[in-house]
Each structure stands twice: as structure tokens, then as C-alpha cells.
Image (spheres, rainbow, N blue to C red):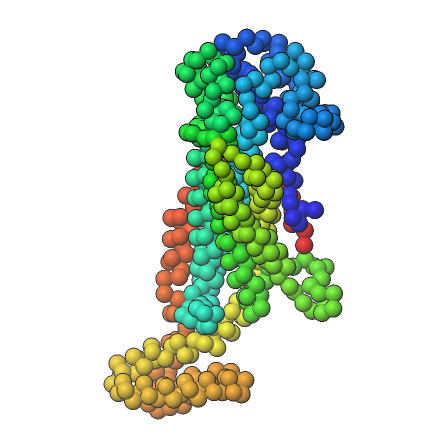
Length: 469
């Protein structure tokens, strides 16, 4: 169900993707070995090429059951459809040649999809932030009312986090190395034997295979496997995206409770089977739920890396087959949800303003005091009067459940006569948002727009799966 996995990401971690990549790796190895002088015929390579996608999974499964070895099961299944190539398939390689290099290929393709959806998320949020950059709203510290910000400026806080995630994804894609052609313990001993001690050919073999598989570099040194620290870095990156999503959706859930913001709600959607009036932020809740799972994964990768003894130990295998695909599958759905939420998110300006005006009189007292002092008033006397009025107004709000009447109290006090005719203008919310408008415009123009222009090719890519609620 695409509530929890999309077709796009599922395809990357599918058996078809995995085992066709194994065959592409075997073809890249054999082709490079031929180019470096090993006796491999064009006919053998052609048979391999013609059958890259001709996989009999049942037959491979039978071989695997017989040999108790997945790689050799697929070697024989490949050999059945490319019989002339059978003698040279997997020549000089160890299981990790196909296993680890395929993992890296899948991680690279999955990171590309994550990058695409991060860029699309930033693009949609940019529209929302720009639209609401001038809407004053209560800021909150400790989840208590604080100085005003704007709805759009708050959105840029979510975007800043996602921008940092985008930069991490870009870095990992630019620097992700292939395992390459390393041999059973990373010494390339078998390949050195294959090339009669020619070190230069062994080095070139590694470079040629990496190039054929679309990688600029391989890990400089390794044991049998690439260092599992790479897995930790990747899952930490996914955790970072999940943290950003959780923060954003957590804010939306709190704002939904205040009735200031609502996520998209379908015409016939039911919020509760019992309470027909409810409009629950279900998408945001699912985002938080999936993100919590993603954030739990890096410690597993850290422990797996730390427990790799010497050149390799197999206790990394089972857990990696779970945490790497599931981490990406979950992040992919989270990003789909973020785009969907941001694209249809509704702001209720009058509710936002109501909450602002419930608190703004307290925040405006310093401005009122200074205006009265400039008109000749006594600062200490005015300060004490404001303190008393504020305490009394607070008692009315909290003790009687009534509206904040601080401004009415000041309007009736002769001490504040100098501002009586301009009280309304002194408490205009837009006077209290600082540089929120300018900061939003600058951030969108200087930080986000260059990324969207650089990655404009990703913006046009269609997302295959929608969002099920």
C-alpha cells in the first residue's frame, strides 16, 4: 500500500533491480577483463549482455536451495541462459563484488530520488512562505506566546532544515564511492594472480569497472566489504530528513489545535468514527510516526559498523537488508506527504489575528510607555500604572475567561491621554514583526531560488504515487 511505500522507491530495492545489477556488474567485470587481455570472447560477452534482464527467479531459487549460497545460485541461473559465458562469469570475484557494489548502486539511486523529492518539497514550501510572509502571527518560545513573527517566516524555519538536508544529500551523492574490485579480504590477490602479477592492470581493472557502473571513485581501501560507516552516514542523513519532517509536522499539529492552520482535508474525509466534527491532522501524524521510525535506525548502523571484526563478519548482512531499504522507503513516503501537506495547507488569517490581538496589548506596553514619556509623562509613574493594568487584565483573562481588556483600561486612564487618539495604530501587528518580511524574502531569493534553478530538471519529474489518507 502506498501509504507506506511508493512504486518508485520499491523498484530501486526490488529483486529485479538487485539481480539485474548483479548481472551488469558481472558484465562490467568480464568486459574490463577482456579489454585488459584476459581470454574472453565477444560471443561470451554478447550472451551476457543479451540476458541481463532474462532472470528465471524460480530457477535461481532452486540453485540457491541446492548450494545454500545466493550468489552462486544466480551465477548458475545466469549461466543457464548464457551458457558460453558460464566459464567466465564471476571470474576472480567474491560474493561482495556483486553484493556490496549493488548495495552502493541502490543507495545512489535511492539518494537521487530523495534529492528530487527534497527539491520538490522546497519548491512547494517556497510558494507557501512567500504567500504568507506578511501575515503576523504569535511566535512561541516554551510554547508560550512570545514576540510576533509571520506565518511565512515560520515556514522558512522548516525550509532551512530541509535545505541543510538537501546539502547533505548532494554531498553524499557527489562523494559516494563504489566498493570496486577488491577481492576476498580487500588485497586484490586473486586479480593479481589472474593478471600474472601485473599491478597496473589490477588497478586499471578497478577503475574501468567503476567507470562502467557510473562511479568516479571506489573506496580507497577495504576489507571484504566497503566500510559500514558509509551505511551509518546514509542513515544519519535520512534521520536528518526525518527530524526536519517531524519538526514541521509537529508545528502543524499544534497549529491545527489552535485552528490557525489545517492540512488538506478531502470533501468526504472522515476525521473520527465517533466524533463527526473532527478534522484530525492525519497526514502530519503519519509523517511523525514514520519519522520516529527512521530516526531509530542510525544506532543500528553504528553498532553494525562497530562490530565488524577485521576484514569482515557476516553479522552485518541480515540487519542491513532491513534498515537500508526500509529507511529509504519511509523517507520517500515522508517527503511525498510533506509535498501534499504544503501544497494544500490552509491558513485561517482571522483566527491567527484573534490570537495575536489577545497577546499583543501586553507586548505593546513598552511602545505605549515610550510614547507617553516623549509627550512629557513620568516614566516611573507610567510603568507602575501599566504594571497594575496588566495584572488586572491578566486576572480577567485567566480568572474570568474574558477577553484581554488592557487597551480599554489604558484608554480610560488619564495618565495615558497622550496616546488615546492613536492606540489602534500603536498596536498594529505589522509594527511588531521585526524583519520577518525581509528575512523571508531574502531567504527565498538568496538561498532557495538558486537551488531551484540549479535543480530545475528535478522539478518537472512526476511523482508516480499519490498520498492515501
